Image 1 (cartoon, one colour):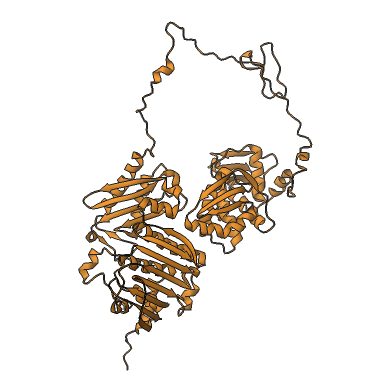
Image 2 (cartoon, rainbow, N blue to C red; image 1 turned 180 degrees about the horizontal axis):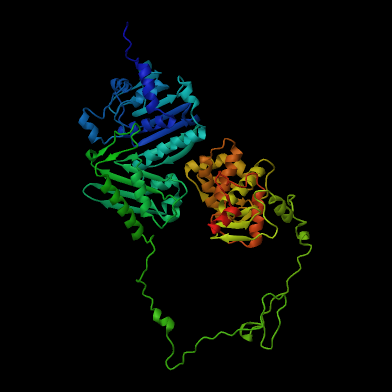
Length: 615
Protein backbone atom coordinates (compact mmCIF):
# COMPACT_ATOMS: atom_id res chain seq x y z
CA UNK A 1 0.00 0.00 0.00
CA UNK A 2 1.48 3.38 -1.03
CA UNK A 3 2.04 6.30 1.32
CA UNK A 4 -0.72 8.92 1.47
CA UNK A 5 0.97 11.83 3.27
CA UNK A 6 2.62 14.41 1.02
CA UNK A 7 3.67 18.06 1.04
CA UNK A 8 1.43 20.65 -0.54
CA UNK A 9 2.83 22.61 -3.49
CA UNK A 10 3.83 26.16 -2.57
CA UNK A 11 1.11 27.67 -4.76
CA UNK A 12 -1.59 25.67 -2.97
CA UNK A 13 -0.13 26.36 0.46
CA UNK A 14 -0.04 30.08 -0.32
CA UNK A 15 -3.69 30.05 -1.39
CA UNK A 16 -4.64 28.34 1.87
CA UNK A 17 -2.66 30.92 3.84
CA UNK A 18 -4.28 33.67 1.79
CA UNK A 19 -7.66 32.51 3.01
CA UNK A 20 -6.66 33.62 6.50
CA UNK A 21 -4.55 36.68 5.68
CA UNK A 22 -6.42 38.13 2.68
CA UNK A 23 -10.11 38.07 3.53
CA UNK A 24 -11.12 41.04 1.36
CA UNK A 25 -9.50 44.04 -0.44
CA UNK A 26 -9.21 45.87 2.89
CA UNK A 27 -6.82 43.15 4.10
CA UNK A 28 -4.45 43.92 1.22
CA UNK A 29 -4.58 47.65 1.97
CA UNK A 30 -3.83 46.98 5.64
CA UNK A 31 -0.81 44.75 4.98
CA UNK A 32 0.72 47.07 2.39
CA UNK A 33 0.22 50.16 4.56
CA UNK A 34 1.86 48.43 7.52
CA UNK A 35 4.84 47.53 5.33
CA UNK A 36 5.13 51.15 4.21
CA UNK A 37 5.06 52.40 7.80
CA UNK A 38 7.69 49.85 8.86
CA UNK A 39 9.86 51.04 5.94
CA UNK A 40 9.95 54.53 7.46
CA UNK A 41 7.66 56.23 4.93
CA UNK A 42 6.54 59.80 5.61
CA UNK A 43 4.33 60.18 2.53
CA UNK A 44 1.95 57.47 1.29
CA UNK A 45 -0.40 57.55 -1.71
CA UNK A 46 -3.30 55.10 -1.94
CA UNK A 47 -5.24 54.41 -5.14
CA UNK A 48 -8.35 52.22 -5.15
CA UNK A 49 -10.33 51.22 -8.25
CA UNK A 50 -13.60 49.29 -8.13
CA UNK A 51 -13.37 48.99 -4.32
CA UNK A 52 -10.09 47.09 -4.65
CA UNK A 53 -11.36 44.39 -6.98
CA UNK A 54 -9.62 45.86 -10.02
CA UNK A 55 -6.69 47.79 -8.55
CA UNK A 56 -4.98 48.58 -5.25
CA UNK A 57 -1.86 50.71 -5.43
CA UNK A 58 0.20 51.80 -2.41
CA UNK A 59 3.18 54.10 -3.06
CA UNK A 60 5.55 55.26 -0.33
CA UNK A 61 8.83 57.14 0.05
CA UNK A 62 10.33 54.65 2.51
CA UNK A 63 13.65 52.83 2.53
CA UNK A 64 12.96 50.63 -0.49
CA UNK A 65 14.42 47.16 -1.12
CA UNK A 66 17.37 45.65 -2.91
CA UNK A 67 17.05 43.33 -5.89
CA UNK A 68 17.46 40.29 -3.64
CA UNK A 69 15.17 41.55 -0.87
CA UNK A 70 12.25 42.28 -3.20
CA UNK A 71 12.40 38.67 -4.45
CA UNK A 72 12.74 37.22 -0.95
CA UNK A 73 9.84 39.32 0.37
CA UNK A 74 7.37 37.11 -1.51
CA UNK A 75 8.59 33.86 0.04
CA UNK A 76 6.53 32.43 2.89
CA UNK A 77 7.75 33.34 6.39
CA UNK A 78 10.30 35.77 4.99
CA UNK A 79 10.59 38.78 7.32
CA UNK A 80 13.03 41.46 8.39
CA UNK A 81 11.30 42.04 11.73
CA UNK A 82 12.35 39.06 13.89
CA UNK A 83 15.34 36.71 14.10
CA UNK A 84 14.44 34.34 16.94
CA UNK A 85 11.51 33.37 19.19
CA UNK A 86 12.44 35.94 21.84
CA UNK A 87 11.92 38.77 19.35
CA UNK A 88 8.18 37.95 19.21
CA UNK A 89 7.78 39.39 22.72
CA UNK A 90 9.67 42.60 21.90
CA UNK A 91 7.93 43.59 18.67
CA UNK A 92 7.70 47.30 17.90
CA UNK A 93 6.89 47.02 14.17
CA UNK A 94 3.50 46.57 12.54
CA UNK A 95 3.99 43.31 10.64
CA UNK A 96 6.31 40.46 11.54
CA UNK A 97 5.02 37.07 10.34
CA UNK A 98 6.18 37.29 6.73
CA UNK A 99 3.04 35.75 5.19
CA UNK A 100 1.28 38.82 3.80
CA UNK A 101 3.08 39.36 0.47
CA UNK A 102 3.19 35.64 -0.34
CA UNK A 103 -0.55 35.36 0.34
CA UNK A 104 -1.40 38.46 -1.71
CA UNK A 105 0.69 37.26 -4.66
CA UNK A 106 -1.07 33.87 -4.56
CA UNK A 107 -4.50 35.36 -5.36
CA UNK A 108 -3.73 38.34 -7.61
CA UNK A 109 -1.44 39.99 -10.15
CA UNK A 110 1.30 41.91 -8.34
CA UNK A 111 3.75 44.44 -9.69
CA UNK A 112 6.41 46.01 -7.46
CA UNK A 113 8.78 48.89 -8.18
CA UNK A 114 11.31 49.72 -5.48
CA UNK A 115 14.57 51.62 -5.03
CA UNK A 116 16.83 52.37 -2.09
CA UNK A 117 18.26 55.90 -1.63
CA UNK A 118 21.81 54.76 -2.40
CA UNK A 119 20.92 52.78 -5.54
CA UNK A 120 21.21 54.27 -9.04
CA UNK A 121 18.20 52.32 -10.34
CA UNK A 122 15.44 50.27 -8.88
CA UNK A 123 13.88 46.85 -9.44
CA UNK A 124 10.60 45.87 -11.09
CA UNK A 125 9.09 42.51 -10.15
CA UNK A 126 5.92 40.99 -11.66
CA UNK A 127 4.22 37.98 -10.02
CA UNK A 128 1.01 36.21 -11.04
CA UNK A 129 -0.55 33.56 -8.78
CA UNK A 130 2.78 32.99 -6.94
CA UNK A 131 4.64 32.57 -10.24
CA UNK A 132 7.37 35.11 -11.01
CA UNK A 133 6.86 36.37 -14.57
CA UNK A 134 9.66 38.92 -14.76
CA UNK A 135 12.29 40.82 -12.77
CA UNK A 136 14.27 43.65 -14.29
CA UNK A 137 16.04 46.94 -13.46
CA UNK A 138 13.88 50.04 -13.77
CA UNK A 139 14.11 53.78 -13.23
CA UNK A 140 11.83 54.78 -10.34
CA UNK A 141 11.62 57.06 -7.32
CA UNK A 142 13.06 56.19 -3.95
CA UNK A 143 10.66 54.01 -1.99
CA UNK A 144 8.27 51.25 -3.00
CA UNK A 145 5.15 51.06 -5.16
CA UNK A 146 2.90 47.98 -4.89
CA UNK A 147 0.24 47.42 -7.55
CA UNK A 148 -2.26 44.62 -6.86
CA UNK A 149 -4.64 43.82 -9.75
CA UNK A 150 -7.53 41.42 -10.24
CA UNK A 151 -7.81 40.26 -6.64
CA UNK A 152 -9.11 36.66 -6.27
CA UNK A 153 -9.01 36.16 -10.05
CA UNK A 154 -8.06 32.49 -9.53
CA UNK A 155 -10.53 31.91 -6.66
CA UNK A 156 -13.96 32.80 -8.14
CA UNK A 157 -15.77 31.48 -5.05
CA UNK A 158 -13.95 33.97 -2.80
CA UNK A 159 -14.55 36.84 -5.23
CA UNK A 160 -18.26 35.96 -5.38
CA UNK A 161 -18.61 36.43 -1.62
CA UNK A 162 -17.33 40.01 -1.66
CA UNK A 163 -19.93 42.60 -0.71
CA UNK A 164 -21.02 45.66 -2.69
CA UNK A 165 -18.46 48.30 -3.62
CA UNK A 166 -19.88 50.61 -0.97
CA UNK A 167 -19.39 48.02 1.76
CA UNK A 168 -15.92 46.98 0.63
CA UNK A 169 -14.85 50.63 0.46
CA UNK A 170 -16.10 51.10 3.99
CA UNK A 171 -13.77 48.32 5.20
CA UNK A 172 -10.89 49.83 3.24
CA UNK A 173 -11.41 53.27 4.77
CA UNK A 174 -11.57 51.75 8.26
CA UNK A 175 -8.12 50.24 7.75
CA UNK A 176 -6.75 53.52 6.38
CA UNK A 177 -8.20 55.50 9.30
CA UNK A 178 -6.62 53.15 11.84
CA UNK A 179 -3.17 53.60 10.29
CA UNK A 180 -3.62 57.35 9.77
CA UNK A 181 -4.69 57.95 13.39
CA UNK A 182 -1.76 55.98 14.77
CA UNK A 183 0.82 57.77 12.59
CA UNK A 184 0.00 61.46 12.46
CA UNK A 185 3.54 62.23 11.30
CA UNK A 186 2.83 60.53 7.98
CA UNK A 187 0.85 62.24 5.20
CA UNK A 188 -1.76 60.23 3.28
CA UNK A 189 -3.32 60.93 -0.12
CA UNK A 190 -6.28 58.75 -1.15
CA UNK A 191 -7.76 58.31 -4.64
CA UNK A 192 -10.90 56.31 -5.41
CA UNK A 193 -11.71 55.50 -9.03
CA UNK A 194 -9.18 58.11 -10.25
CA UNK A 195 -10.76 60.87 -8.12
CA UNK A 196 -9.08 62.53 -5.13
CA UNK A 197 -11.00 61.30 -2.10
CA UNK A 198 -9.05 62.84 0.78
CA UNK A 199 -5.64 64.22 1.72
CA UNK A 200 -4.35 64.09 5.29
CA UNK A 201 -1.15 66.11 5.73
CA UNK A 202 1.33 65.61 8.55
CA UNK A 203 -0.24 67.02 11.72
CA UNK A 204 -1.01 66.30 15.38
CA UNK A 205 -3.55 63.79 16.67
CA UNK A 206 -6.41 66.21 17.35
CA UNK A 207 -6.18 67.80 13.92
CA UNK A 208 -5.91 64.37 12.28
CA UNK A 209 -9.14 63.33 14.02
CA UNK A 210 -10.80 66.51 12.75
CA UNK A 211 -9.54 65.94 9.21
CA UNK A 212 -10.95 62.42 9.11
CA UNK A 213 -14.15 62.70 11.15
CA UNK A 214 -15.06 66.38 10.86
CA UNK A 215 -14.03 69.67 12.43
CA UNK A 216 -17.16 69.68 14.59
CA UNK A 217 -15.98 66.58 16.44
CA UNK A 218 -12.52 68.11 16.83
CA UNK A 219 -13.98 70.99 18.85
CA UNK A 220 -15.78 68.56 21.19
CA UNK A 221 -12.81 66.41 22.19
CA UNK A 222 -11.45 66.26 25.73
CA UNK A 223 -7.79 65.32 26.30
CA UNK A 224 -6.94 62.43 28.61
CA UNK A 225 -3.60 61.62 30.17
CA UNK A 226 -2.53 59.12 32.80
CA UNK A 227 0.72 57.38 33.66
CA UNK A 228 2.01 54.68 35.97
CA UNK A 229 5.12 52.51 36.04
CA UNK A 230 3.20 49.98 33.90
CA UNK A 231 1.66 52.06 31.13
CA UNK A 232 1.17 55.60 29.86
CA UNK A 233 -2.26 56.60 28.49
CA UNK A 234 -3.03 59.58 26.29
CA UNK A 235 -5.53 60.60 23.63
CA UNK A 236 -8.98 62.15 23.42
CA UNK A 237 -12.56 61.30 24.39
CA UNK A 238 -15.74 63.02 23.23
CA UNK A 239 -18.17 65.00 25.34
CA UNK A 240 -21.49 63.28 26.18
CA UNK A 241 -23.15 65.34 23.41
CA UNK A 242 -21.04 63.55 20.79
CA UNK A 243 -22.36 60.08 21.73
CA UNK A 244 -23.96 58.23 18.82
CA UNK A 245 -26.12 55.15 18.34
CA UNK A 246 -23.15 53.28 16.86
CA UNK A 247 -19.59 52.54 17.97
CA UNK A 248 -17.80 53.54 14.76
CA UNK A 249 -15.71 56.24 16.42
CA UNK A 250 -14.10 54.11 19.12
CA UNK A 251 -10.40 53.49 18.62
CA UNK A 252 -7.84 51.84 20.90
CA UNK A 253 -4.11 51.68 20.13
CA UNK A 254 -1.22 50.06 21.95
CA UNK A 255 2.27 51.07 20.82
CA UNK A 256 0.60 52.61 17.71
CA UNK A 257 -1.11 49.32 16.85
CA UNK A 258 -4.92 49.25 16.60
CA UNK A 259 -6.67 46.66 18.73
CA UNK A 260 -10.11 45.74 20.11
CA UNK A 261 -10.71 44.72 23.69
CA UNK A 262 -14.14 44.54 25.35
CA UNK A 263 -12.74 45.15 28.82
CA UNK A 264 -11.20 48.44 27.78
CA UNK A 265 -14.33 49.62 25.96
CA UNK A 266 -16.47 48.69 28.98
CA UNK A 267 -14.17 50.70 31.27
CA UNK A 268 -14.66 53.83 29.18
CA UNK A 269 -18.41 53.29 29.06
CA UNK A 270 -18.47 53.05 32.88
CA UNK A 271 -16.75 56.43 33.05
CA UNK A 272 -19.71 57.92 31.15
CA UNK A 273 -22.26 56.31 33.47
CA UNK A 274 -25.28 58.60 34.11
CA UNK A 275 -24.00 61.00 31.44
CA UNK A 276 -25.33 59.14 28.38
CA UNK A 277 -28.00 56.51 27.77
CA UNK A 278 -27.18 52.81 27.73
CA UNK A 279 -27.64 52.66 23.94
CA UNK A 280 -25.27 55.55 23.14
CA UNK A 281 -21.57 55.20 22.39
CA UNK A 282 -19.13 58.05 23.03
CA UNK A 283 -16.23 58.52 20.60
CA UNK A 284 -12.74 57.93 21.94
CA UNK A 285 -9.21 57.74 20.58
CA UNK A 286 -7.02 56.22 23.30
CA UNK A 287 -3.33 55.33 23.02
CA UNK A 288 -1.36 53.05 25.35
CA UNK A 289 2.43 53.16 25.52
CA UNK A 290 3.72 50.04 27.22
CA UNK A 291 6.79 47.85 27.31
CA UNK A 292 6.42 45.29 24.45
CA UNK A 293 7.42 42.56 26.88
CA UNK A 294 4.19 43.20 28.83
CA UNK A 295 1.87 42.44 25.91
CA UNK A 296 1.37 39.57 23.48
CA UNK A 297 0.31 40.58 19.96
CA UNK A 298 0.49 37.06 18.57
CA UNK A 299 -2.78 35.63 19.92
CA UNK A 300 -5.04 36.56 16.98
CA UNK A 301 -4.61 35.94 13.21
CA UNK A 302 -5.32 39.59 12.34
CA UNK A 303 -3.49 40.93 15.44
CA UNK A 304 -6.54 42.95 16.49
CA UNK A 305 -6.69 41.31 19.93
CA UNK A 306 -3.80 41.80 22.34
CA UNK A 307 -3.10 40.19 25.68
CA UNK A 308 -1.86 42.39 28.54
CA UNK A 309 0.14 41.03 31.47
CA UNK A 310 -1.29 43.66 33.85
CA UNK A 311 -4.70 43.96 32.18
CA UNK A 312 -6.71 44.55 35.37
CA UNK A 313 -4.50 47.44 36.47
CA UNK A 314 -4.48 48.99 33.01
CA UNK A 315 -8.29 48.85 32.82
CA UNK A 316 -8.62 50.52 36.24
CA UNK A 317 -6.21 53.28 35.23
CA UNK A 318 -8.09 53.81 31.97
CA UNK A 319 -11.45 54.26 33.71
CA UNK A 320 -9.96 56.64 36.29
CA UNK A 321 -8.21 58.66 33.57
CA UNK A 322 -11.39 59.17 31.55
CA UNK A 323 -13.40 60.07 34.67
CA UNK A 324 -10.75 62.60 35.67
CA UNK A 325 -10.90 64.23 32.24
CA UNK A 326 -14.70 64.45 32.29
CA UNK A 327 -14.65 66.01 35.76
CA UNK A 328 -11.77 68.36 34.99
CA UNK A 329 -13.60 69.74 31.95
CA UNK A 330 -16.85 70.27 33.91
CA UNK A 331 -18.74 67.60 31.99
CA UNK A 332 -19.94 66.06 35.24
CA UNK A 333 -22.50 68.42 36.85
CA UNK A 334 -21.09 70.14 39.93
CA UNK A 335 -21.79 73.10 42.18
CA UNK A 336 -19.56 76.11 41.59
CA UNK A 337 -18.98 78.44 44.53
CA UNK A 338 -16.30 80.51 42.85
CA UNK A 339 -18.68 83.22 41.57
CA UNK A 340 -17.89 86.52 43.28
CA UNK A 341 -21.34 87.99 42.78
CA UNK A 342 -22.79 89.39 46.03
CA UNK A 343 -26.15 87.65 46.04
CA UNK A 344 -27.12 89.39 49.32
CA UNK A 345 -27.72 92.56 47.29
CA UNK A 346 -30.69 90.88 45.67
CA UNK A 347 -32.51 90.89 49.00
CA UNK A 348 -31.37 94.31 50.27
CA UNK A 349 -34.06 96.85 51.28
CA UNK A 350 -33.84 100.53 52.00
CA UNK A 351 -33.22 101.38 55.63
CA UNK A 352 -36.38 102.02 57.61
CA UNK A 353 -38.70 100.82 54.83
CA UNK A 354 -41.36 98.29 55.79
CA UNK A 355 -41.34 95.00 53.97
CA UNK A 356 -44.70 94.48 52.25
CA UNK A 357 -45.87 90.90 52.06
CA UNK A 358 -46.99 89.77 48.58
CA UNK A 359 -50.70 89.22 48.06
CA UNK A 360 -52.79 87.38 45.50
CA UNK A 361 -56.26 88.53 44.43
CA UNK A 362 -58.63 85.98 42.93
CA UNK A 363 -61.80 86.48 40.89
CA UNK A 364 -64.24 83.87 42.29
CA UNK A 365 -66.65 84.36 39.33
CA UNK A 366 -64.15 83.44 36.59
CA UNK A 367 -65.20 80.37 34.60
CA UNK A 368 -62.66 79.16 32.01
CA UNK A 369 -65.27 76.95 30.29
CA UNK A 370 -67.58 79.79 29.31
CA UNK A 371 -67.13 81.06 25.77
CA UNK A 372 -67.83 84.61 27.03
CA UNK A 373 -66.87 84.99 30.72
CA UNK A 374 -69.11 87.06 32.95
CA UNK A 375 -67.87 90.49 33.85
CA UNK A 376 -67.92 91.68 37.42
CA UNK A 377 -67.81 95.10 38.94
CA UNK A 378 -64.20 94.45 39.83
CA UNK A 379 -63.30 93.44 36.27
CA UNK A 380 -62.64 90.06 34.81
CA UNK A 381 -58.92 89.94 35.31
CA UNK A 382 -56.91 88.69 38.22
CA UNK A 383 -57.29 91.00 41.19
CA UNK A 384 -60.11 92.86 39.43
CA UNK A 385 -57.66 95.36 37.90
CA UNK A 386 -57.16 93.85 34.49
CA UNK A 387 -59.40 94.45 31.49
CA UNK A 388 -58.44 91.06 30.02
CA UNK A 389 -61.37 88.96 28.80
CA UNK A 390 -61.53 85.63 27.06
CA UNK A 391 -62.03 85.97 23.30
CA UNK A 392 -65.05 84.45 21.63
CA UNK A 393 -64.36 81.05 20.13
CA UNK A 394 -64.28 81.34 16.37
CA UNK A 395 -66.51 79.13 14.29
CA UNK A 396 -64.75 76.14 12.78
CA UNK A 397 -67.40 75.47 10.15
CA UNK A 398 -66.27 75.28 6.50
CA UNK A 399 -62.64 75.12 7.58
CA UNK A 400 -61.83 73.04 4.48
CA UNK A 401 -62.11 76.19 2.36
CA UNK A 402 -58.88 77.44 3.91
CA UNK A 403 -56.98 74.74 2.07
CA UNK A 404 -58.73 74.88 -1.30
CA UNK A 405 -55.94 76.98 -2.79
CA UNK A 406 -53.14 74.71 -1.54
CA UNK A 407 -52.16 71.51 -3.38
CA UNK A 408 -52.72 68.38 -1.36
CA UNK A 409 -52.96 64.66 -1.83
CA UNK A 410 -56.30 62.96 -1.66
CA UNK A 411 -56.83 61.65 1.84
CA UNK A 412 -59.48 59.69 3.68
CA UNK A 413 -61.22 61.77 6.39
CA UNK A 414 -59.56 61.11 9.71
CA UNK A 415 -62.77 60.03 11.47
CA UNK A 416 -63.49 57.46 8.79
CA UNK A 417 -59.85 56.38 8.73
CA UNK A 418 -59.73 55.99 12.49
CA UNK A 419 -62.86 53.90 12.76
CA UNK A 420 -62.26 51.72 9.73
CA UNK A 421 -58.61 51.10 10.61
CA UNK A 422 -59.43 50.01 14.14
CA UNK A 423 -62.31 47.70 13.20
CA UNK A 424 -59.76 44.90 13.10
CA UNK A 425 -60.85 41.90 15.20
CA UNK A 426 -57.69 41.90 17.26
CA UNK A 427 -56.86 45.60 17.45
CA UNK A 428 -60.13 47.49 17.22
CA UNK A 429 -60.83 50.39 19.55
CA UNK A 430 -64.26 51.18 20.84
CA UNK A 431 -65.70 54.40 19.49
CA UNK A 432 -65.75 55.87 22.99
CA UNK A 433 -62.41 54.29 23.95
CA UNK A 434 -59.94 56.14 26.09
CA UNK A 435 -56.37 57.16 25.24
CA UNK A 436 -53.70 57.86 27.81
CA UNK A 437 -50.01 58.61 27.53
CA UNK A 438 -47.64 56.85 29.94
CA UNK A 439 -44.25 58.40 30.76
CA UNK A 440 -44.34 60.14 27.36
CA UNK A 441 -43.16 56.85 25.83
CA UNK A 442 -46.32 54.77 25.46
CA UNK A 443 -49.96 55.20 24.54
CA UNK A 444 -52.54 53.10 26.39
CA UNK A 445 -55.82 52.65 24.55
CA UNK A 446 -58.90 50.46 24.93
CA UNK A 447 -59.76 47.72 22.44
CA UNK A 448 -62.48 45.07 22.13
CA UNK A 449 -60.46 42.21 23.58
CA UNK A 450 -58.00 44.06 25.76
CA UNK A 451 -55.83 47.09 26.39
CA UNK A 452 -53.27 48.06 23.79
CA UNK A 453 -49.90 49.50 24.78
CA UNK A 454 -48.17 51.31 21.90
CA UNK A 455 -44.51 52.29 21.85
CA UNK A 456 -44.60 55.83 20.40
CA UNK A 457 -41.12 55.89 18.87
CA UNK A 458 -41.36 52.43 17.30
CA UNK A 459 -44.85 53.10 16.00
CA UNK A 460 -43.76 56.42 14.53
CA UNK A 461 -40.85 54.73 12.74
CA UNK A 462 -43.34 52.30 11.14
CA UNK A 463 -45.60 55.17 10.03
CA UNK A 464 -42.69 57.10 8.53
CA UNK A 465 -41.16 54.01 6.90
CA UNK A 466 -44.28 53.13 4.94
CA UNK A 467 -44.88 56.77 4.07
CA UNK A 468 -41.31 57.31 2.81
CA UNK A 469 -41.35 54.03 0.91
CA UNK A 470 -44.61 54.99 -0.82
CA UNK A 471 -43.20 58.42 -1.68
CA UNK A 472 -40.05 56.94 -3.19
CA UNK A 473 -42.15 54.75 -5.45
CA UNK A 474 -44.23 57.62 -6.82
CA UNK A 475 -43.58 61.26 -7.64
CA UNK A 476 -41.31 63.76 -5.90
CA UNK A 477 -42.78 65.24 -2.74
CA UNK A 478 -43.25 68.85 -1.69
CA UNK A 479 -40.40 70.58 0.11
CA UNK A 480 -40.61 73.13 2.89
CA UNK A 481 -37.86 75.71 2.48
CA UNK A 482 -35.63 76.50 5.43
CA UNK A 483 -35.56 80.12 6.60
CA UNK A 484 -31.75 80.02 6.65
CA UNK A 485 -29.72 77.41 4.72
CA UNK A 486 -28.39 74.73 7.07
CA UNK A 487 -24.72 73.90 6.63
CA UNK A 488 -23.50 70.44 7.68
CA UNK A 489 -19.99 69.01 7.80
CA UNK A 490 -19.38 65.36 6.95
CA UNK A 491 -16.39 63.08 7.00
CA UNK A 492 -14.87 62.02 3.70
CA UNK A 493 -16.56 58.64 4.02
CA UNK A 494 -19.95 60.16 4.93
CA UNK A 495 -19.61 62.47 1.92
CA UNK A 496 -19.37 59.52 -0.50
CA UNK A 497 -22.40 57.80 1.06
CA UNK A 498 -24.47 61.01 1.07
CA UNK A 499 -23.67 61.69 -2.57
CA UNK A 500 -24.86 58.18 -3.40
CA UNK A 501 -28.27 58.64 -1.76
CA UNK A 502 -28.89 62.30 -2.71
CA UNK A 503 -31.29 61.40 -5.59
CA UNK A 504 -33.50 59.35 -3.25
CA UNK A 505 -33.43 62.05 -0.57
CA UNK A 506 -34.50 64.59 -3.21
CA UNK A 507 -37.49 62.39 -4.06
CA UNK A 508 -38.51 62.53 -0.40
CA UNK A 509 -38.42 66.32 -0.31
CA UNK A 510 -34.86 67.05 0.84
CA UNK A 511 -33.10 69.81 -1.05
CA UNK A 512 -29.39 69.26 -0.40
CA UNK A 513 -26.52 70.86 -2.31
CA UNK A 514 -22.86 69.82 -2.28
CA UNK A 515 -21.00 72.96 -1.21
CA UNK A 516 -17.47 71.71 -1.80
CA UNK A 517 -15.07 69.29 -0.10
CA UNK A 518 -17.02 67.60 2.71
CA UNK A 519 -19.58 70.38 3.22
CA UNK A 520 -23.26 70.24 2.24
CA UNK A 521 -25.98 72.88 2.45
CA UNK A 522 -29.65 72.00 3.10
CA UNK A 523 -32.19 74.39 1.57
CA UNK A 524 -35.35 72.38 2.19
CA UNK A 525 -36.77 69.41 4.10
CA UNK A 526 -39.91 67.23 3.98
CA UNK A 527 -42.89 68.38 6.04
CA UNK A 528 -42.29 65.55 8.56
CA UNK A 529 -38.76 66.71 9.41
CA UNK A 530 -38.05 69.71 11.60
CA UNK A 531 -35.26 71.99 10.41
CA UNK A 532 -33.58 71.99 13.82
CA UNK A 533 -33.26 68.20 13.69
CA UNK A 534 -32.18 67.81 10.08
CA UNK A 535 -28.41 67.78 10.68
CA UNK A 536 -28.59 64.96 13.21
CA UNK A 537 -31.09 63.10 11.04
CA UNK A 538 -28.80 63.22 8.00
CA UNK A 539 -25.78 61.93 9.95
CA UNK A 540 -27.81 59.14 11.53
CA UNK A 541 -29.45 58.35 8.20
CA UNK A 542 -26.02 57.78 6.65
CA UNK A 543 -25.05 55.39 9.46
CA UNK A 544 -28.37 53.54 9.30
CA UNK A 545 -28.15 53.29 5.50
CA UNK A 546 -24.77 51.58 5.71
CA UNK A 547 -26.11 49.08 8.23
CA UNK A 548 -29.27 48.42 6.21
CA UNK A 549 -30.00 44.76 5.57
CA UNK A 550 -32.48 45.33 2.72
CA UNK A 551 -31.14 44.85 -0.80
CA UNK A 552 -33.58 47.32 -2.35
CA UNK A 553 -32.13 50.83 -2.26
CA UNK A 554 -35.54 52.46 -1.71
CA UNK A 555 -36.22 50.21 1.29
CA UNK A 556 -32.82 51.00 2.81
CA UNK A 557 -33.34 54.73 2.36
CA UNK A 558 -36.87 54.61 3.80
CA UNK A 559 -35.74 52.48 6.75
CA UNK A 560 -32.70 54.65 7.48
CA UNK A 561 -34.67 57.89 7.34
CA UNK A 562 -37.60 56.51 9.35
CA UNK A 563 -35.34 55.31 12.17
CA UNK A 564 -33.43 58.58 12.30
CA UNK A 565 -36.48 60.87 11.97
CA UNK A 566 -38.79 58.99 14.36
CA UNK A 567 -39.88 60.81 17.49
CA UNK A 568 -37.00 60.65 19.94
CA UNK A 569 -37.75 63.50 22.34
CA UNK A 570 -40.76 61.94 24.07
CA UNK A 571 -43.44 64.50 23.07
CA UNK A 572 -46.50 65.24 25.15
CA UNK A 573 -49.57 64.33 23.10
CA UNK A 574 -53.16 65.48 23.47
CA UNK A 575 -56.03 62.91 23.26
CA UNK A 576 -57.00 63.94 19.71
CA UNK A 577 -53.35 63.74 18.62
CA UNK A 578 -53.09 60.24 20.09
CA UNK A 579 -56.21 59.15 18.19
CA UNK A 580 -54.84 60.47 14.90
CA UNK A 581 -51.50 58.79 15.65
CA UNK A 582 -53.22 55.45 16.32
CA UNK A 583 -55.26 55.78 13.13
CA UNK A 584 -52.10 56.37 11.09
CA UNK A 585 -50.43 53.37 12.70
CA UNK A 586 -53.28 50.97 11.93
CA UNK A 587 -53.32 52.09 8.32
CA UNK A 588 -49.85 50.53 8.00
CA UNK A 589 -49.51 47.05 6.60
CA UNK A 590 -47.43 45.90 9.60
CA UNK A 591 -48.79 48.00 12.46
CA UNK A 592 -47.56 45.56 15.14
CA UNK A 593 -43.88 46.06 14.26
CA UNK A 594 -41.50 49.00 14.05
CA UNK A 595 -39.63 49.86 10.88
CA UNK A 596 -36.76 47.54 11.85
CA UNK A 597 -39.00 44.67 12.94
CA UNK A 598 -39.27 45.27 16.70
CA UNK A 599 -42.60 44.95 18.55
CA UNK A 600 -44.48 48.25 18.57
CA UNK A 601 -47.88 47.14 19.96
CA UNK A 602 -48.57 44.91 22.98
CA UNK A 603 -52.09 43.58 23.67
CA UNK A 604 -53.03 43.13 27.33
CA UNK A 605 -55.95 40.70 27.17
CA UNK A 606 -58.92 41.47 29.45
CA UNK A 607 -59.15 37.85 30.53
CA UNK A 608 -55.55 37.93 31.74
CA UNK A 609 -56.16 41.19 33.57
CA UNK A 610 -59.30 39.84 35.30
CA UNK A 611 -57.47 36.67 36.23
CA UNK A 612 -54.87 38.64 38.18
CA UNK A 613 -57.57 40.11 40.43
CA UNK A 614 -59.33 36.78 40.94
CA UNK A 615 -56.24 34.92 42.07
